[in-house]
Length: 346
Ligand code: 1HN
Image (cartoon, rainbow, N blue to C red):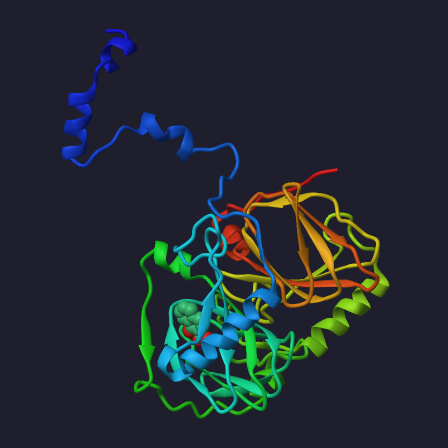
């Protein structure tokens, strides 16, 4: 029998398939196996001046204690309601007011904080506190106890988590206050002393871990980035980009999330670059335009942008000071799973 005949008027057959909880692959094959990634997320920018007042209002409506975490989720317009910023990542802006604490908990999900406004706020990880200054990167890797506290002024940071990844694997566990074990090692500054200068203790050699170093101060990374820029020419596709690393193994800072800083000098527009990883950018200094598949998105300090998988990204500095951007992505997963691809256009 010809294929057309076999498939003609197949309504009763399809009804039977549905009843038996099966479906024809031939309907969806082209959508499942695509030549290039087809993300559901759209490129998008959240202007800080737009979102910050909403967060301040949230501060009047709910306490950090009541909310557990007082956060406005950055909902990608392509996947509104999914609580995702790119197909595999989550982003939110969190507010902690003076005198507040966000209660201690731990969960499977890995989190990073990129600090946008802070005067002396703190986060503790497994009991070890660090002070958060603007544009510091602070990590709370998977299953580490963490809590946050406000200080003199309202504190706002960008939260980046691997929530959609953990959700897809249905692998999420969490514990809240009440189960916290005592941690005699939790001395402020202990981790920086042990790992912060390209040294590491000679005991405890598990390489398959998230980074023990969980605080990357702006004062430290911005100095490295500026010195690097003074020593080597900017890359045509990446400007000057450095990755935050795990001092135990040189790999990504967390097992699922990679983090970077990028600088593009005044007058430069990078050439189009695609990567299989979905990424989130946050402005630190300067101003510029992200050209994403040809569409233009202006970014300045504290603005947050979603750049989905395989979108062609060009970064243009439109101001007269260096444009500095922080970013995080799911590249860490792509590399471990053998998915990673990059394309550099001319
Ligand atoms: C979380 O633990 C924090 O610790 C922030 O600040 C946002 C979003 C979903 C799940 C856990 C935090 C979060 C989160």
